Amino acid sequence: MIDIIKTEFLKLKRYSVIKAGIIMTMLSPLLSLFYSTANSGQTWTFDYFMQQVMISNCTLFFPIIIALIAGYIITREYTDDTMKNIITIPIPYRQLLSGKLLVLLLLTIYFSFIGCMIAFIINMFAEFPGAHFGNILNMFLRVTGANIGVYVSILPIILLFCCSANNFLGGVALAFVYGYFGTFEGTLLNYYPIKASMILLDANCGAEYGYTYHIFPAFITITLALLISLIILANKKKDPSTLSVVKKKKTVRKKGW
Amino acid sequence: MLDLVKCEFWKMKRKRLIYALMSLSLFFPLILAYMAKAGTGTDTTEHYLQTRFDYVYTMMLGYGLVFLLPCLIGIIAAILFFIERDCDTSKNLRTIPVTSTQLIIAKISILFIFSIAFCLISTLSVALFCKLFHVGMVYGMTYKILMCLIFGAFIVAASLPIVFLIICFNKSFLLSILLAFFYSIFNWGILGTIGTSISTAKIRFLNSFPVICVMNWLSGSMMDHLQKDNLLPEAYLIVPTTSHTIFIVAITVILSLWLIIRFYKKWTR
Image (spheres, each protein chain N blue to C red):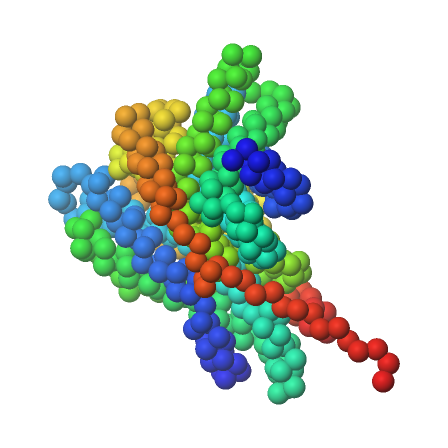
């Protein structure tokens, strides 16, 4: 498994989608900074700013980033026609997929760290009060934890849609809508995986709208999402008829007469 | 031109993603109605019941159409414009002959039809699910349907810059979808800057963005036809005039169409 992860990282070097992921991660703190310009009577502190970063991460950016990168690194084996080589090594499809999903988890942590660093730099310029070492560490851990929760919530979508080159973009669009529902508030959302990942790290995330959330149902929801993902992964089979992508061969133009 | 639009519909038949996106117009109001049901109190007065229905309807307009629809339009535009490139059918169309401008107008007409159909189905679904789940009282449907049809047309016009960007970059579906997401999130971000008090300069700045301008204008037009218990008096200040909205939309359409035709011609040359 370590070798698979290592080779995945070697492949990552060439993927431009990682750069797109970093840019999207940077947008989250910028969007929160944008919100801070609204005159709504809210006092912006470092805690509140990071909470806004966490909410926009979980609802708007990370579902897309995770689904996009997952789909890209999984379907690369079909679009680059390297699956046949991997299967003959032999590496079972499920093991390969597990390796890719683990790399995705590490990338989620990496993107979270970048997002937090950008948020910290923005905070230095915006000068929101309350940024001291303990607080910074606490907020970094919260944001990263919530993003890992989003990763777990998105896993079923990745396994059902993003493993096929044909359905990959549909999966990304679905992840967008799925994350987007997390912006809503309501007691029922305690059982919604995206919201649950936020509640797990900050149970007061709906306090300003008058909603009280509970950690235990959120924990159960995330555990269920993980369990469903494991079941799907355990039953996942490579289907060559739907997963093969035929590449067009470029015909060479004849020279001379 | 009608033949071209018909042909575009035939091409779309094979794209399953279009059906999936269209199904959101049913799915989204279902979730909203279900959530509104959970938050409905025991009050049975007509005023309260109408407020609950308006809550679902405005949520559908705000979340479903202002934020989601530009993104869906971007995805469909990418499918429509890339289909000729990917299937290598551009040259066949040119020999008929179909000009680039005709083809672009046919494809943009499809976007308008999709958007209006999406808005119409969303509004009807809101009424249906509110009735089914007993969320408030369904009323004023003729006006609501009329407004959503206008909104459907205006939101496509306001989203044409994203179609231009898709054609301009002419890369992959991935980049196009990302651009469409960015456009939606960008509008969402701008909306987030509206606070309880807002300066005139900021109102003018916000209303220069097509999607925001259309949304604010529509909200202003509907204020007298909806229950507005929780509306702040300041909310009226951000409503642009009809002439300003038409001006912004017209500028967006003319500029976007000109750029789309220019870049598409360069692309298919």
